[in-house]
Image 1 (cartoon, rainbow, N blue to C red):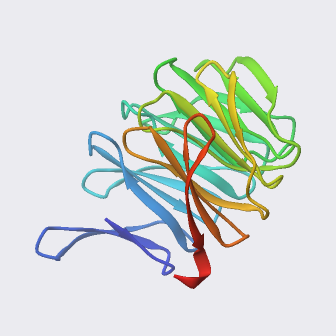
Image 2 (cartoon, rainbow, N blue to C red):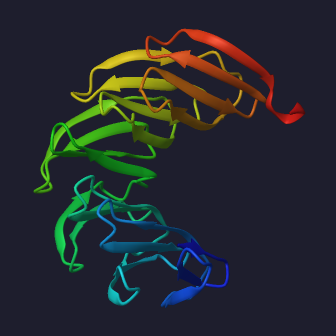
Image 3 (spheres, rainbow, N blue to C red):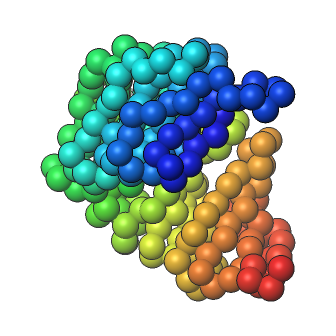
Length: 232
């Protein structure tokens, strides 16, 4: 599976032969992904839509927001799709493209959203620095003032035990899946660009505009500095 600025995604076989062209978008495709069970495909485009396709590359439905879409992903069980947008909404969809729940954030930008598999819940973050928890019917269960500035990214660690948020306030925060803050990682001196947990969930790597790569343990202590990211 590949995607391109030419507004398409393509399915390929192991011999490099094109099997299908997924063509519905009117702007570049930003990302594409298979569902965990490989029975469906998502294409995420700059045209404010997401294409939902079957495994053969046949369109099921085009999912739309009223502003740019930041999140487009399958649930861990592969039965749902979650999108979030600058239109102030996150939407839970079934695999036929029907809306299951609309998570309304009162016109605040929703830069990230995801699933907390262990709790059967959804999390979202908003441009005012809040972290929100929802059940799958669309009822909000908790909101936390997590950061002092916009949260750029958020995700769940591979072991499902930690929620990680990155903010323009130059901090990373670790939460448990109940929303309790476990640690604040605040040694960068520039805006956070990226953070990723190790596959075993024991460490976190962060990159910021200060050019430094740091590796942290999940208690929030730096275990290694890799120096200037720009120099190598």
